[in-house]
Image (cartoon, rainbow, N blue to C red; front, side, top):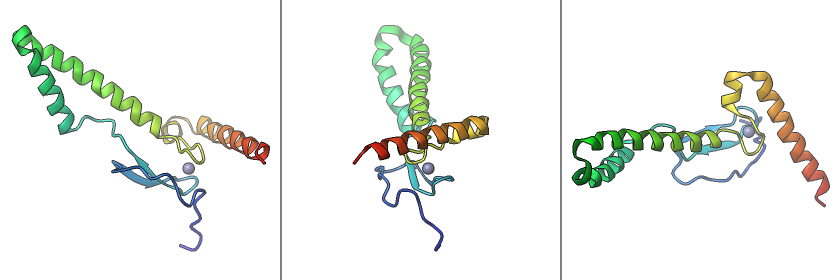
Length: 122
Ligand SMILES: [Zn+2]
């Protein structure tokens, strides 16, 4: 534990994180606020909204339910995907899984920008 020196000793804390982990590159503690999958609560919300349409559409509301679930999941996925890159070192686990060279380039770009910014600031 002596060698454990995260890049950011006091990272931004997320309320009720869905997943907590340490960044594999800079060792900063991270938390994700969104999961890419729909939870039981989300399904209940969609069902309640769908039931509001039942008097107008009858059993065709099933189509509305599926459409809303798809839209919901699309937004959850995009929100959780935006969270993956580390805000302190720029490490993106999803890019690392697809192509390590691009992931390395992104980290170098991120750190380059950050150092330029720190040099300019007094
Ligand atoms: Zn990091």
